[in-house]
Length: 206
Image (cartoon, rainbow, N blue to C red; front, side, top):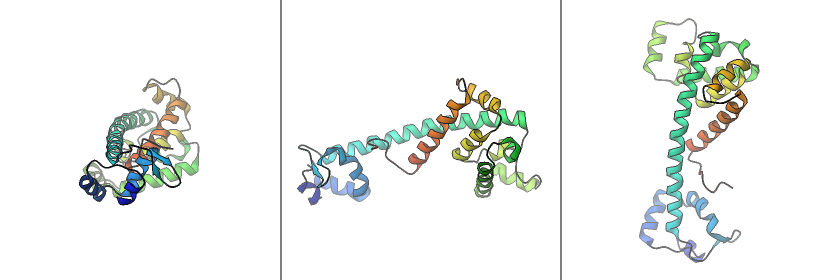
């Protein structure tokens, strides 16, 4: 704290600041006070820069991540439902394991490997009951299997589908005229979701 004070950062309540730094690491908070620095090399703060403003910005970013993650979850559930319904009705219950339905075999193999790992890790009752009853085919149908797949795996499955008509049909469910828009959006959402899951800040990204 003395180092920050020597650099020009002001504190309204030093004891509260000490307690804050016990919970939030120095280097995590440092990302939020960088805009307050007038000298980026020596880390000298601009006049009237306050530690409490840094904490306010940190808390805002924390709340923003929560709001964004909630919105992404709603989109993810809707996308998962539409992909499962539309592709399964056109290509069967095990389409995700059919190499002929996908453009890139390397991506297909990676997705299938991820799905296998996700199935092994899952503790969902409906999967436990399924494997207790069936051992062939090796995967549960899409409406079970893809309920436990990650958003990243789901987005790759969609983007790698060879049938553009199917992809357009799904895109139209979201009011989009063509599949390329949806592909771009879900790729971006997948990256954003991973950033939020790892507590990456969403403000002051430079």
